[in-house]
Amino acid sequence: MPLLSPTDLEAIALTLRLAAVTTVILFLVGTPIAWWLARTRSRWKGPVRAVVALPLVLPPSVLGFYLLVTMGPNGPVGWLTQTLGIGLLPFTFWGLVVGSVLYSLPFMVQPVQNAFEAIGERPLEAAATLRASPLDRFFTVALPLALPGFVTAGILSFAHTVGEFGVVLMIGGNIPGETRVASVQIYDYVEALEYADAHRLSAVLLVFSFVVLLALYAGRPDGKRG
Amino acid sequence: MICVSLRLQWPGFSLDVDEQIPARGVTALFGHSGSGKTTLLRCIAGLEQAATGRLSVNGDVWQDASRWVPTHRRPIGYVFQEPSLFAHLTVLGNLRYGQKRSRNADRRAVQFDLEQAIDLLGIGHLLKRRPAALSGGERQRVGMARALAVSPKLLLMDEPLAALDLARKQEILPYLERLHNELQIPVLYVSHAPDEVARLADHLVVMEAGRVLASGPLNDTLARLDLPIRLGEDAGVVLDGHVAERDARWHLLRVACGDTSLWVRDTGASLGDHARVRILARDVSIAHEPKAGTSILNTLPAEVISLGDDAHPALSLVQLAVDGSPVIARVTRRSADQLGLAPGQQVWIQIKAVALL
Picture 1 (tube, rainbow over the protein chains, first blue to last red):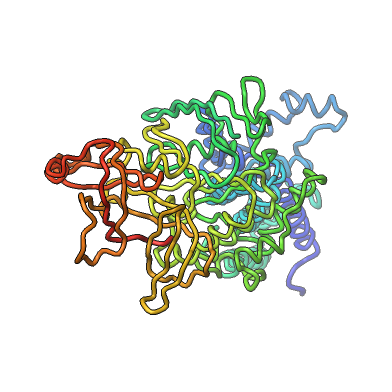
Picture 2 (cartoon, rainbow over the protein chains, first blue to last red):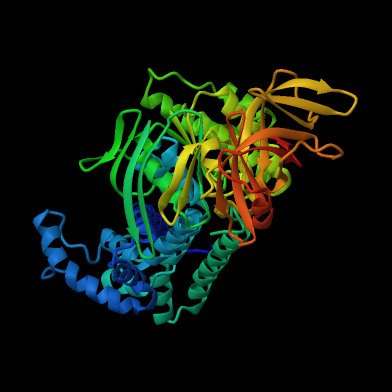
């Protein structure tokens, strides 16, 4: 018997695809939020930080429940997606992506925000006196100097999405090839008392998680920061 | 001409400056920390956006009620106290960062040659290194070259030597003097160190508590009796002249400042070189007659211009004119009284130490 069954491989492939898509979207969504949080003196900074950090403390089932309601046929997001002809997001891959982006948002925003804050004002001022426009300064000074923070954020977001379970179960259900990710697959095995199968897949995730964290702590481009 | 009329209000600090600063040579913004000199420099660079008022440089308005030119559109070079090099770029990458952007911004402008900046600051051997691999002095030289490479019409320097130890300062000062002597770019130089000001500046703006206390040509301003109190032990004047004679036997140089000659230690300067000497008030004594039998090398006839109080009640400051150049002397009030010093009186001054800068 091979180590992993085709169903397992399908679940792992789906998990990796979900994590990759989520991480890419998080880079695009999280970077502007992190930049704003790192530099603003607005009174909205506190509330926005709190909202971004919510998934850290909220039970995933709570997040999943609200997403299910808002993206469902009677929810505002559901109404919007239906009006736009996309249909309903729950129990689809893209519904999972939306859930994962929200769920992993703090893992992207916080390291990037810390990296931006660590740069400080001075290199950006220096760039301004060297004729760089604000956008130019962002791309040629802030981003390169914050690179270690981005690497950390990317790895953490990816790994955290791979480990997601509660939100997926609430809004994704258990559709093979569409929403059945590795963590749900393990749950299914346990439910069916197929412990040997659960062991194999669990071991794969365990090794994966360890390797990711090892890469994060031992192989960072800049071991001092991030 | 740099016309500054700026006001800024922060909790516990306000800046209120109305000043015309010549747009040539080196102008020192001098004052203690907290006097607002760095804030004024940042306002001129556009790094401080809170100031209101008007700012124009050689007729170009950079700020007024309706206009605010952002920093990256101002033709300035800026040297920060800490060099603030980009850690992710090599030295050459740092130099090119501003150079290529300034070239894109204004293709017609006369470009400062990168090679020239590299030569001037002696950093040719560092180009491939990262900032982290440079010494403090080397970093600051790269910071200066980077500022020059944008071909600035105005160079702003915020205490470029303050973060360096004495040895590194001595390493950089000659390069600053080369900037002064070889470039036609006007420089605003923020400093709280009287020796740097004496050595580099042509024009002096003295600041205190966000206001301009005095401003004018270096010598005139240094010789004012109402300011030395604030300079303390560093009160004194500078005289500009040239090296006129070398006395090889005694290792001395004669510096001619107009018709006045001063003997100084031979520093290796060549005959005919421009020379600036500094005479501290505490090193000048006053006598009715030129004394014989003294170790003092430089004894000169002078006229008393005015007398003023010093910080300590035992001391007074005397402003004198030596062949038209102002010199100040710090003497005790008792001596001043015994000599009967009064404006217009002809006396002799003895200068214990003259420093060739």
